[in-house]
Amino acid sequence: MASPWPPGECKQNARKFSCHLHAQKLLLALNENRHNAHLCDAIVVIGEEKKYVQKNVLSAASHYFRALFNYGEATETENGKTVINLGSVSVTMATFTLILDFLYTAEINLCPDTIQDVLQAADLFLLNDLKVLCCDYLDTCITPTNCIGIREFSAQYTCSWLLHKVTRYLDEHFREVSFCDEFLSLSADAVTELLNRDTLVINSEDDILDAIIRWFRFDVQGHQAEMINAVTRCVRAAQISESFLEAFEDQSPDLHHLNLPKLIRDLRQTATELRPRGFSCVLLACGGEGNVSDHSDDSEVKATVNCVKIYNQGTSTIGQWISLPNMNSPRTGHGMVEVGGCIYVFGGRDHHCQILNTGEKYNPNTNTWTICAPMAHARVGFGLVAVDDNIYAIGGSNDMTDPLTFMETYNVFSNKWQSLPDMTMKRVWSAYAAVGKKIYVIAGGTVGKFYEAVECFDTRTETWVSVCPMRERRCDARAVTVDEDIYVFGGFRRFECPSAMHSGHSLKFCGTEIYSTCNDHWLPMCNKGGVPGMCTMTDVSHIEGAVYNGEDVLVVGDLDIGNAFHCVRAYNKITNSWRCVVQNKPKNQRFYQVCLLHMPNAVLRKLLWDQEKMVYSDLK
Image (cartoon, rainbow, N blue to C red; front, side):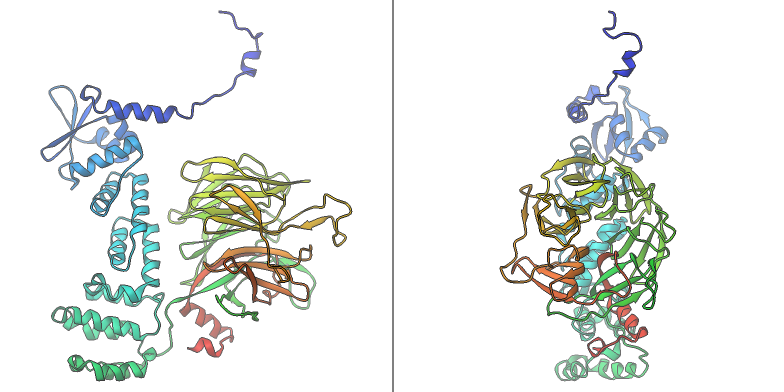
């Protein structure tokens, strides 16, 4: 049959088409076919039980089975099917059947009775997707009674993100954990490792000694030889109260033979310093621009990092900004996120006006910066968003003019980047937020244009979709996730009415909008009548960032409230009210990125002492 197109036009009119349901239908058909023995080409044997399987499916799903079928020893059955004996790998046929069902359906039912066997098998068979699902399930099961066991289990099978989360839970709930059988049954070495942690949240050091006494009483015979050693190695004697020792002498006659009060008092004589436990929530201001010094009007790109302690309650305060070590590179227009208790910074523009692809990591436990693997694309004015242990770099620009659509993701444990599907829309200086496993790119613009469009990236399916646009287009806004909602603060847009009230400039400071991810709908934030809100709606205000500490939304920047400027203002959604948290801004620093961080109290105290900023309350 002759082509309906003239010669040379066929290639020009060629288009690519795809059927999105094809892969799903194919997997469904394969799942049906595996129940027909004559369509299977291998048999898995575990003990006395057999299961017919398809080698191509197992090989595609698991590098373990691919290597086994390619290089492993196998024998042929009488009807020509390959026999694989898994009797030596400690996996039951019931567990293998659950995993086989998952490979064909992408679904699995997990429960306390099966989770340990399934995770162990997923680790053995190199099924990373299934391993992630098992970790997600265990994350929902963490309680004071089982967190030590989950912590050991996650460490054994290299579940790094779960290990971080359960360790953080143990730190924050140590008092409850210390009453549970898992803790009381620990070996002396395990107790010592746990009780030496700086980040345990306790009321006082008395809680540590009290936990050791409970551990001793749980098994007096077994713990007799290690009791004194545990006290000597774990208890910070200088911080034990005299009232606790006096109460111990009066209320614990059965333990008088240990002579603990004398031991503690003797240890106090050799104590060199107070080392508090637990951590404090601090707000970091990182990089940006500012004056070279107090006596110069010259501006420079900063490597400066400052932090201020955030209190959940209280009124306006003069914040005590504390200097942290500088970044390795000065940056402005960069991205910054907190993941796993560390700060990650990527991209931006340096003091030579070079746009960067480099990154670095701040570890508060060591108070140091280290270099991270660079991004594939240099970026400024982009989004940096964290979902679990992955960081996503989205959009931005690499030449200050044409925006990028490129997206890439960085894993904090592997220290590697990989590319992801591009955004559908070019834009720069957007607002970004993550809700659950989804990332939202909000508003932004290109040269000469501002947008109200919003698109959403699902990290599980790696697909982009458009969602409800904002009510007011804007650029350079800041977004923060609060439960299932996204709050978008500030940003600027052009005045659309020449007669509108403004300060003589062409840009308007935008109002706050709230997006419900459940209802796919935007609403404006309404403040109480006659009560000061976030700031006056003029372009003299500028927002550097917004964060959520679990109780209040903290908006950071130069916030004009009419008669003064505040640096950090807190919004409580329950009372629909604003208050000042920190009035003074970090010295000679603006256009910085902000983030919340749990700073170990031991590190924070040393910084305050070294910088001669210690106050009476810090000595407690």
